[in-house]
Length: 327
Image 1: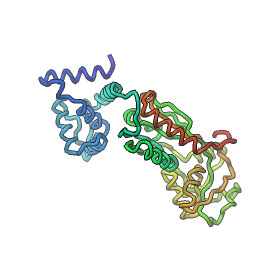
Image 2: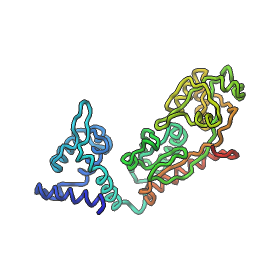
Image 3: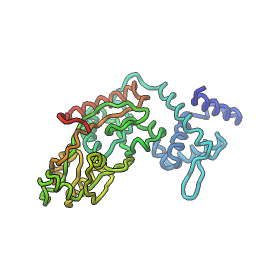
Image 4: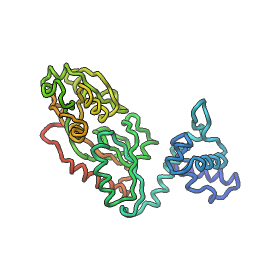
């Protein structure tokens, strides 16, 4: 017997015992329960499903009555799920996915759709992909909404979080339960402010290793990927500052003498705005591959197929950087 069947049978038993009818246990209440179990916070759960906080609190009271369990209890300054609530998370998620599948349309009408897609990507991808995507949506799907959620790497990409995501843009990491397609390629270069005292001399290895660098360690990584690659070559650069995003690194480089070793496309996108200069590095780490990941559950979903087609078109429009082996 599947988890979803077990969950619904359990809920039906509760309804029977309390002499309630099935109509009182509507799907909206189950959606509210799902959000509360994911967020363990009434306010955040309300935002997730578009309810007011009083409405979410009312739903929680109804669920407590139906289930005979408090579900959320205060522990110090935070709320925590009860053991019963923890046990409901997986079967409820599976059950709701099955129900949603029953109502999935055979076609996706982009012009009339008000669908909300949740995408996860680092700031680099937001800068390069979101402007052309939103321009396209303005023209063909004005009612569609894109939510870009905070980045997390595969190591902290939980199953509960994964089922809320429609697409991930990332380098070649593996995300469990997601398919992968190549979106575009890039290469890395040095970004420095215009008028940097070292300037073009950074092409020289000695100057490069004497320079002070800003490293980028995004959430879920232990170090900058450039430093991982340099260490494999027996080299180490001088890191003066660590920041969590590429855009922050470029902003710092634009206003100091620190050097940012970042994807070339991002430098090009912001060079005029930030008065940055691109310098070829003395060591070439090769090609970066950016991938689009989408969940198996959405493989045949018309809306997901539509969005993936647009994203692949945007990736193609960026072009490829060929002639170097991927690192």
